Length: 294
Image 1 (cartoon, rainbow, N blue to C red):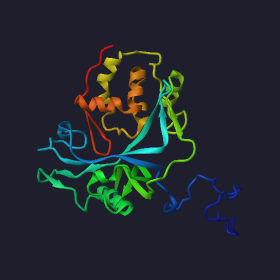
Image 2 (cartoon, helix red, strand yellow; image 1 turned 90 degrees about the vertical axis):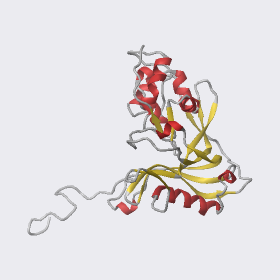
Image 3 (cartoon, rainbow, N blue to C red; image 1 turned 135 degrees about the vertical axis):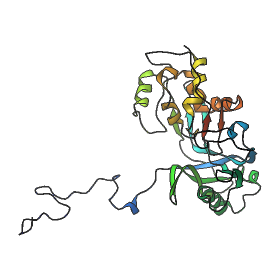
Image 4 (tube, helix red, strand yellow; image 1 turned 180 degrees about the horizontal axis):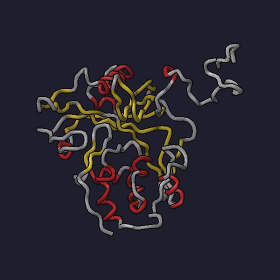
């Protein structure tokens, strides 16, 4: 306290100044970082495609039906440092989806316009691939290429926040191999762990556990639970496995459903059946709610 009784800025009487521990950011936002995954990966799919016809239907991101199918970049990268382990002991790859729409609907004119240099997310991703590999045409030429990647569940780009941004950072040589123990993201069957995951506990997002048996309470059949998935998964992203599982009410957390979400087979089946559509970046667009019966 000064002679005139004033309290120096940043302090309180009797309370010494403190320094936050490691992991707590400073008050200067220039030192802050965005949450991300960093991993070595291999391109397993890279191709032009027309969107699924169901993708043309109105959804929470667009209120009108597309006048035609739009072109997309279908891009999938397998993590080389991690696997999912299913309850039966089998392992499946961890895949990140990082493509984007090459055309977009113009709500003002009602037309389909090409993606252009004002499309901040697409420009950022596309330029990262060009910087890393120089040549990215045709897109199939990227299949088999390896790199160190950064995956952002959300990333600020200019004045907007983009979801599911996958960026190659450094190309790896063709003979590169991962050395060491792969990280294993385990999915367990214990209902208690499922309740912990649903409550936000149980480790990191990638390691969140989920029940493959329905916890106590109202239980619906697997068929009825599957019918609810288009509504429950709408707006989620297939890259966020823990988010998909934790979005499910306890009564629909059957083993087959959890296993199918982890391996991706259930998502693919729902898409083939026309129950959902998948954006190029992995966003799930579901149908209208379907009443469930026990």
